[in-house]
Length: 171
Image 1: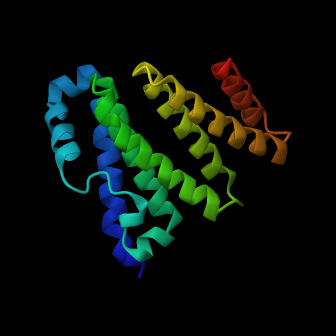
Image 2: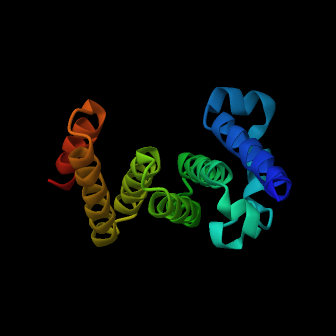
């Protein structure tokens, strides 16, 4: 039933909005969003991985994509507050969801592009934590995805540009 996934989708969108809002320090300080992000981050299930979703919601690409975005925004909020180590599970959950979508919906290149972006974000955090080998592995994964996208759509300038940037990151 599609309605089973709807509350999860709304919750994911709300979490994403709160986390994005919290990344603007001046705004976050004025409205006390930092404590709200803390509550969301410490709430069990706030970063629900795709394999823990109800079956119907897991089938909905839109719901899964929203959950990936919510996990990513939570990770960004944590990382921007100097809590990079704590952000890792959220980045990993986001990437796992993006991989799920890219594999199940190869006809939609947006999912593959999002997966590559997620790998690059995680690589940046890992590099900042001096986990260079893991960062390089994530960048290589992103590079493979970006090469595939650029080959499938050689006319797409965004794919070519992203591929060049990923090559530069690996250099």
